[in-house]
Image 1: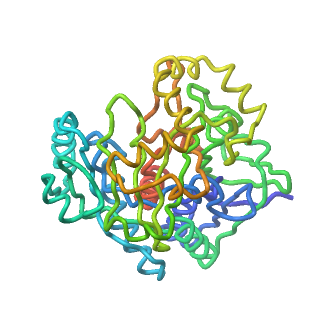
Image 2: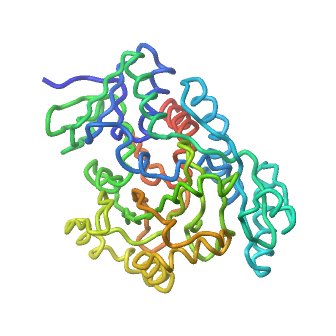
Length: 397
């Protein structure tokens, strides 16, 4: 006999948990459930990211990324403090290490201003005064950027869901989704559920869940591994704020940066190398299924061709700690090879269109009784509360 819900969410990352929690807050009399295939919430992207509370510097004005990120800063800080979860707002330095980067830095300043951010522009001397261990010819200081514990936030959201009377179905893998005129049936390896409305926040499995539900598969998820190192304890105070390079606009990732973590230590990373397994965090993890699907998707080969030289460079940096170190020494010249200590990697779920275009903004697909979050790129963790609110509003409409 199947269980019946008013709203059912698939996916126990921070976006799925935020959505289920806010559905319960909006509809206190509704029956709400959440399905997650892992035994714990926040097992994948949410639990393997940099922990940064992004301010919204880089995103196109008016995009969902820009709007959700700006609102997400205050929401993340408020939720963390309300639930006694440690959070810090040390700010971020975007550092130009060469004079050739100053023009791009000026463009970033303009974009940040359009996104409603207060940015301080610093010269080399001012940068050195604020960050004595950082080298650069100029910088932008973004005061609202911070660091959060996103796994702890997600677990707190899970507690809120159950406190509201909702159900968490952990350790259940979805096997089938069938939409009908009056409901959606979801079958897992352990149970069958019926729901009036289904929300799918599948992350690394978003394309597979969309196809399983009968949606047109006009995108595919390509995994990129982000590799980090933890700096040796002697460098726990090497920086006062988060240190980022000026990003290359031709590259879809922000580059290796220094991050002061909640635990008081500093990490460097991530790079971005092609993942050979969607949920494999070690370099040796390989999924034949994941590789076969990528190889059979035309958009994968097109995006690889467009970014071949960059991809080769990232792979070389991944295979050589000395090359990785040089990326860090551009703005932190005091680092040495032995300072790079092991730290867990992350996997980014990147939606790629058939023509090889990277989907940069949030991508939501809607049917009569389903809403699929097909692409939730960074800053999805920062933006999780506004995204959840938007999904609730969309379902009501």
